[in-house]
Amino acid sequence: MSGRFVTFEGIDGAGKSTHVDWYVERLKARGIDAIRSREPGGTPLAERLRELLLTQPMSMDTELMLMFAARRDHLERLIRPALAAGKWVVCDRFTDSTWAYQGGGRRGPAERIAWLEAWVHGDLQPDRTYLFDLPAGMAAQRRAAARDADRFEREDEAFFERVREAYRGRAGQAPERFRLIDGRLPIEDIRKILEEDIASIGN
Ligand SMILES: Nc1ncnc2c1ncn2[C@@H]1O[C@H](COP(=O)(O)OP(=O)(O)O)[C@@H](O)[C@H]1O
Ligand SMILES: [Mg+2]
Image (cartoon, rainbow, N blue to C red; front, side, top):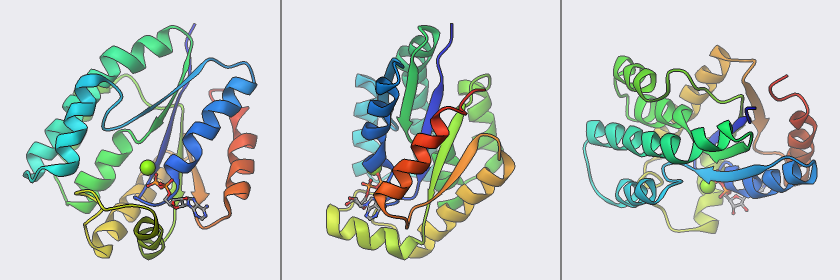
């Protein structure tokens, strides 16, 4: 018995969080035992690391290692036990975010990210990843209207365009796992796309 691992990805303001709770409810309506989580975070320890990551100045290397430390705890205590119990785990961000932000945005070393990924969860990848894609300027406008910026969200538009490109590169490398969602579409249209995709996951 094994569940499914679904992740939501995209730049800040792309619309991930807008859809995650709704998506979990749609799974439950189909009789699927599903839980929602997020990264960095998802466990008490990882949520404390999240607070540090979103507020404290730190080097790129420290940021990279704290992200994977939080992820390891999340995997050990929440993701793996839930999947082993047959549940679906729907997660707002996962390792594609590290490739996009620490790799693309901050131009971090790909070989170290790959090594950390292999160490922390080399045997486990998401069954489905929704990439919410839209221009960085549009995402920035949405964020500005909705909330105060955290440490990542204070980066400039060029940073977020690099993040976006890194995400698109990841999606191109794993087309069977990714579904590219046009984040400019109305919320109702996006929900229709997500709903129609559920049946195809893991088959
Ligand atoms: N498809 C959409 N069309 C218009 N506004 C949207 C859409 N999706 C999200 N929003 C709005 O954009 C803002 C950022 O969305 P959010 O889900 O928080 O993005 P993320 O979690 O990817 O950072 C919110 O105010 C949200 O209501
Ligand atoms: Mg969000």
